[in-house]
Image (tube, rainbow, N blue to C red):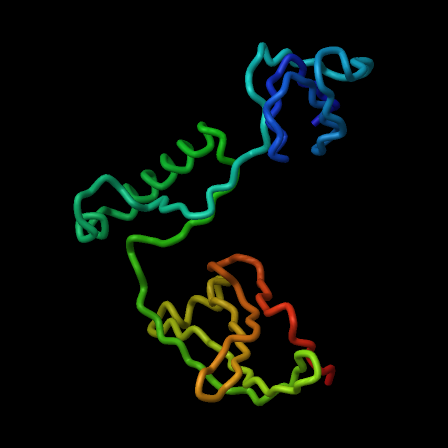
Length: 202
């Protein structure tokens, strides 16, 4: 994208501030400058787009989306929908989000679930400290066993979910300490851990 200046727009900058009249300069694919009022940003060498008072804001992210859910009254009716028709429905829902300002969505679930087996194996123990106290956590690896022909084909198509690693402190009241793994299929690996533990280096 060339250098573009959006002028005469109502800016919502996502900082918590109230909307204000302003201008936004975009250079390439980055926001280079935001000015309040009019004629606050030089127009030399840029393409000027008059927003005519429209609202300009960052793209919104929908963190819990069900693209495949239709207006059917029952889950059974959704599952009987032909795959081709279901694909077109999901595409229509995605377009609806885009048309209303959502630029990113996370698919939370599918109406056509697949039953899988989770194989959980202990991989040994690791020590960590909290303050002056030393503790031991068991490191577990969670593997997804898809099973059947789909389980054979999944790794070849890059659809095999990666392993998830979880660290648990045992005892009368077992406690979560840390985990590493994806939050959804195809997503990045996330590390979630408590703030206070300090892990010993190997």
